[in-house]
Length: 179
View 1 (cartoon, one colour):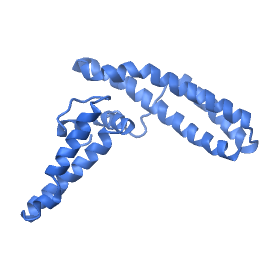
View 2 (cartoon, rainbow, N blue to C red):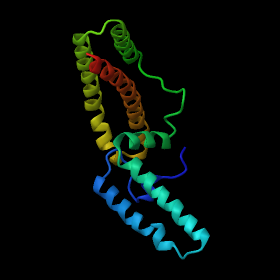
View 3 (cartoon, rainbow, N blue to C red):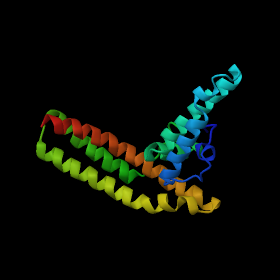
View 4 (cartoon, helix red, strand yellow):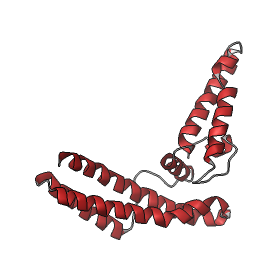
């Protein structure tokens, strides 16, 4: 698990949908507080500490201000994104396999109609996934601690499925530019 809790550093509750203004406000406040120029006459040890805190602030902001990075970060904090442990439901994997087979067909026979249909199918799948996970993401911060593991499991499944679909969308974008 990552050692630093960015939510604690920003004095915010862990949430998949945190207050964006609070994140930005805290980032700017800490950027001023930890700016190396304000500590130029301090001891080398203190300057190093300030540099470490400034870097931590930047990393926290980059992570917490981006929904995908934030989701991955929360899942990592809870030990749910371990390499090699990315099991997904068989029906989803079959659906992805069918999409990948159609992508392979496009390698040999570029068909703009098939590209369009695949894009529609992937967009529909992506929309369905997002619609299904929204209530979980929105309600996570208010869940009692004993209900969070189930929500985190659902978010993990969503995150992994989304990554699969993003790879397919990237491949489709290449075919779309060829057509």
